[in-house]
Image (tube, rainbow, N blue to C red; front, side, top):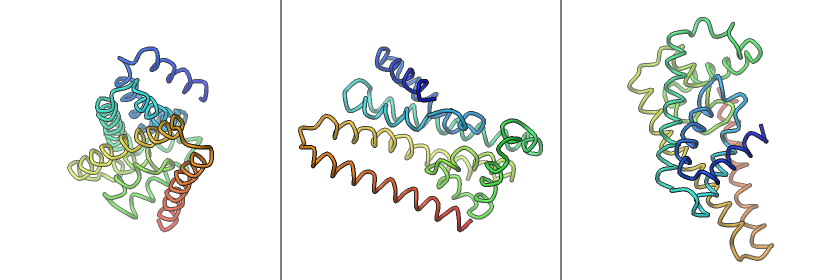
Length: 203
């Protein structure tokens, strides 16, 4: 997958006019339950943010495409949950990863519709909470509201994190200043990971 991500980023560099389409597809795949197991979407989106900082990608088009792709990925997962929920435990890839579906269902049952928003920001849950929402027959309107709002926040946030990384890398700061900024970013990320685990354990 690392080589795949490298190839995707190289394609964006050589074909910047296709960047929005690639970013939209990446966000869709990262949010779609049947692909997210194997797709390095998170890394690609963060790296795309560094390309925004370098002036290779239009930031507005990238953010809109990422948000649209993410919302569509969740919507398709939700629809599959409604239509085929009873069949999913016996379907690939859940035959091999039954815990993924179970964790998504547990989280959704604990938190209800806010789980669709919250789950977007935590990798272990991102693609499976919408599927669980469909299986549990969550009403469409609150699902889509949480889905779209979270997508509009999530995609630009990933691109922005890459933008910050690109800014640090290209700055004229000393090594100590770069290390301090990188340490602060890592601390913030570690805090989010801790919070996600805390929330899930309470579920």
